[in-house]
Every structure is written in structure tokens, then in C-alpha cells.
Length: 305
Image 1 (spheres, helix red, strand yellow):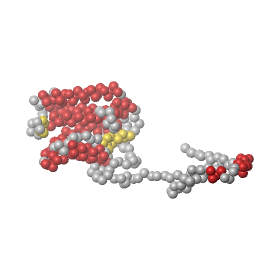
Image 2 (spheres, one colour):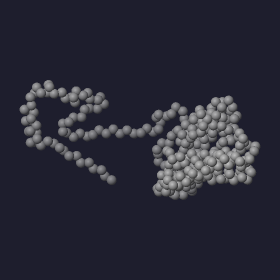
Image 3 (cartoon, rainbow, N blue to C red):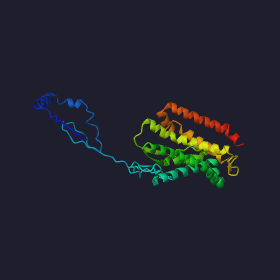
């Protein structure tokens, strides 16, 4: 595509010039003393010269500012890597189960940060961790067993669904979200974290994009069903417990909590994409998660005896 620019020379004609000279000759020279021209007294900036309105065209001066390469303005403390910078992405078109080295590193960072936040939650924050380091470590290990599969399978469901529609898809952690979640858990003993998301690149319809988003919460429901099935078979552990409950109890709660949290129609969460696709589908699955929360609160304890 070619862009062309035509510049018209609007030089005043001879007739116009003679009229201006005649008007200037008739002007009383003392009038300039009575008329204040504010533009004549305006100081010109030191960085550039004043534009002159003499009818002559001048080449415009264009200043191009390039964005920094991400080295400036670094946060004072970085634990989980740098914020991703825009760059060319290699689109892998091979196996649906392909994982790049970068994706594996980001999954590890997000899982580690999520586990640390849960460990702080288990002891009520950083002061509990300082008072009892062993409880902090055991709490992190205990919570990581149900939380890591819930988180990883959730993100992989997005990835597999996107690859099914022919899109490039890889998980990318959010360093800012990880830091915020860990610091919040350390200070208040609660977990609220957006560890990252699966980046999808390709041509998809609104229908397909909504299904890709819904795949994550649905995977958590499937894991909840697995845990409930193991509980119904009497396989709940009575030795490896945290508080009064075993591992499968927390397995059910983690998956329901993670899936329900992602159905919130806000920001980058899955619920916003699902609701954009279909309001009816969104409220159906929100109702399902509300029912699962009620089940965990009222019926799950009775199944454990």
C-alpha cells in the first residue's frame, strides 16, 4: 500500500499582495502602541523555535519515541521472573500435547507460588510460619497435593481445547499476580491469586472461544467427581490428615473453589469469556457450581462419617 501526500502551494497572488500593501499603508503607525498582541510577548519554549505564520510551508518535525526494552522501571523485588514483553511467538503446529521449555518453566513458577500461598494460609500468615516452620512446610505440602493437579489440569484443559480448534496455546505465568497472591497470603492468611493464563492465538469464533474458556472450570468438576468417587469407595485417608479431614475432602473443596472462582465474570477470568459467548450457558454452570458448594458444605462431611 502506498501513501501519497500532496502539498499545495498557496502563495498569495499578485493582486492579493497589492491589496495587503495598500491596507498596511493606510494603517496609522500609532495603532501598534495601543493594541496588545499577546502572542508577541509569549516566551517561546527553549526546546523548539516558534512557528512562523508567514505563509511558507515547512517540513514538519516528527519525534519518534521507541518503547523501552523492559529493562527500565523494574520492581524492587522480583521472585518469579519478569513480566512478559511483546515479541515474536513461535507457533507450534505439531502434537496437541507439545510443551515448550518456556511453558514448562511458567507452569512450575505458578504452581510453586500457588503452593507457597496455600502454605501461608495453612498457618495464618507469615507470623504463623515464623512461629512454626514445620507446620508451614507440612501445610504447603498437604495443600499442594490437591491444588497442583487442580491448577495444572485446569490450564491444560484450556490448552487442549484451543489446540482442538487449531490455535496456538501456551500457558504464561503472571509475575505480578504471583507476587500479589503470595504477599497477600503472607500478610492476611488468605489466598486470592491470578497466577497466569493460557495465551491463545488463532482465528476462533465467539462460540469456540467461549468453549475454550469453559473447558477449565469443567475440568475441575471432573476432578471433583473423581475425588467424590474415591470417598464413596472408602478410600479417604485417615492417617494423612490436616485438622479433622483427610486429603480427598480438601481435593473436593479445592476443585470446586478453583472452578467457581474462575466463573466470576470479571477481568481475565473464564466467566467473563463464557458470559460473552452465551449468557444462558454461563448461568447454567454458575448454578452447577453453586450446587457443588452446597453439596460440599452439607453432604460431603456426612459421607466421611
